[in-house]
Image (cartoon, rainbow, N blue to C red; front, side, top):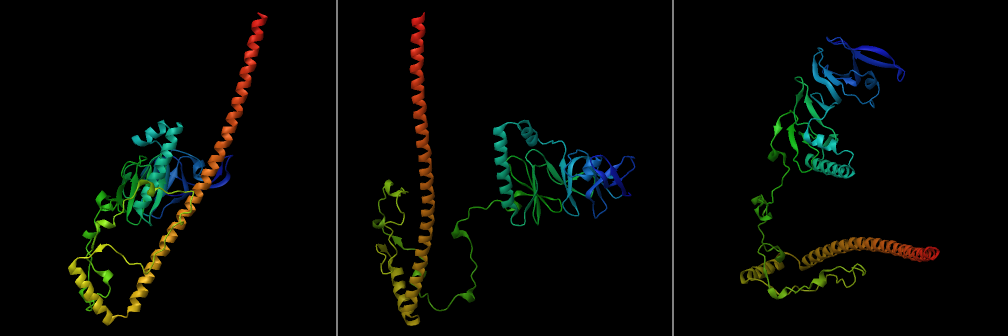
Length: 370
């Protein structure tokens, strides 16, 4: 099929270059910009204005194969190349129930707000599912599109959807309903089961996660730090303090760091019951560690660990202080606004009282006149 070159004589687009083809049906089809694909296929339209101006909306875009046969019917609103094998095709007339219902309520403000929130939720969900290589190819809650494979005429690979994305391995299809699941198809066009997608992460207890250990990496020397004992000692019930409900409340009017007691490196942990066997092991470990490791190194290690913990705690507390200060400022602002509104209400009430008095006087005058 030969692609011919012409010059537009339309008043809106004078002397604009425009390419066109004339297939076997004898009609003139106008080639879109970047519409000639590497495999010989041609994206064209019956509307010459759309071929020149991408902003023109039309409903008669389609695709020819190199031999002039129709690959995608000419009743589409938009067609774009995804790669050498696939096209993104937007329907002119939606057929899915989701989009039809959305269009019915398009002018309702509440429905528009809900649809906008749903769209944001869906896009965010799809981006998480697709990962860092993901991209959104189509996003319109009031329209629908599909991915067409350029091997046979009108070969859709997925369901007509309002949201379509792609990453290095799959295509992602989603309706405009945020409660629906994303549908996956591989880059070859084959459907993929949900469990293969890796969306869901089962709740696996940490203790159930296997850990590979290379026996060659296990040191022959005994453990030199009592903190590395794997058995967890039982904490005495006497150490459990009764916490009143009032102690859990944060007073935003006070500095959060007031009364904060830093970690004392010399303070010893008390009220911990260590089983006899662990106590014996601990004594043996401490004895051996004295022979093999200088005491100064252990003290420095413990000190650095405590310093790191203290730095982390202080960092978190500083962030809490910043947020608390912002909240206090916002409360002050709202209180100021409330005070202004109260004054305005009082003024209006005063006017209302004065008007009532005038009305009563007017009624009395009218009665006297009668």
